[in-house]
Length: 222
Length: 155
Image 1 (cartoon, chains in turn blue, orange):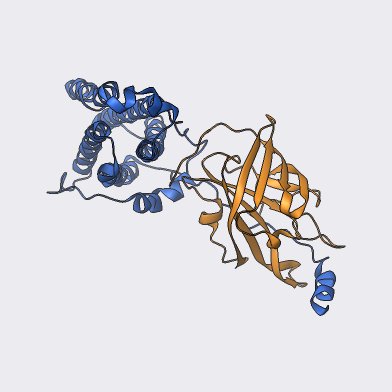
Image 2: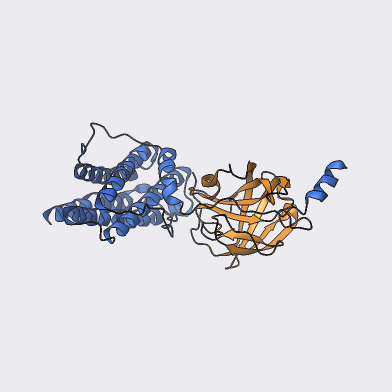
């Protein structure tokens, strides 16, 4: 429980507060023109924030699902509940931030293509790379953020995601931290998460019955 | 990777393609038992894949239409005539017109189409139009290719 309280306090004092403070203090954000007609730089920042929100929606939904699955227990369940709360807070904060900058936040998808987990071990093995990917995604966008206040705030979330990855790494018995975090580009991240964001891709439809074949051969012979 | 305005959208009711003088009702379809995107019941109509995003929402929305029926051309017979920049307009249930423009078009062997690119997630607000193309296989009762016209929301 002590862990949970400390983590919650950390979150309140880092990511959420950092974002809120960043937006409140940002000279750009305080200009009405910034929200009314976003500049190119504001537009790029909004795209990045919506990209982050897309990933946070995925994570928050995933944690909600496994936390209600009945497959987790003991300290793992406590950690997952705490981390799930963090991800839900990230969603709320990013959503508010995007709105405050005059953007429109992306919504959570109606469904995600998560695996059908059968055990706690499977869940841990799945979520550890998800958290590493989340941390790498924030790091990958850091040099692209043009508003320095947003950069500070994004790094604070990156920090939390990296701590999640460290906790899950420890739980599955691998080294909790490399010497340096490795960034991933938007394209690299999307290549990994696209199958999760794409439930039920169908095969191509059958949209022909052959009745135009005769017509087509007549057209070709003209 | 630009994201566009509204995330809200309603079910599509009509599809208009001025360059083809096409104005068709939109049916809502899911998957067949064999896992294929279903097709419109009426060959004069087109069909929106309702297990994917709504047109105008982030991701790849997909609308299919028949190339022909057993007697002759159907609603998407001339789809291959579209070229980059042509407009595709979807009117939704709220009466809002969503305007897309053609970005590119590709024909694929039916079993080699890049399904994730066509139906999968992306950060844009895209609408992909599908119909048959290629050679009619009278034994398999299908064409051997599918034409995909990729369009992107502009307003």
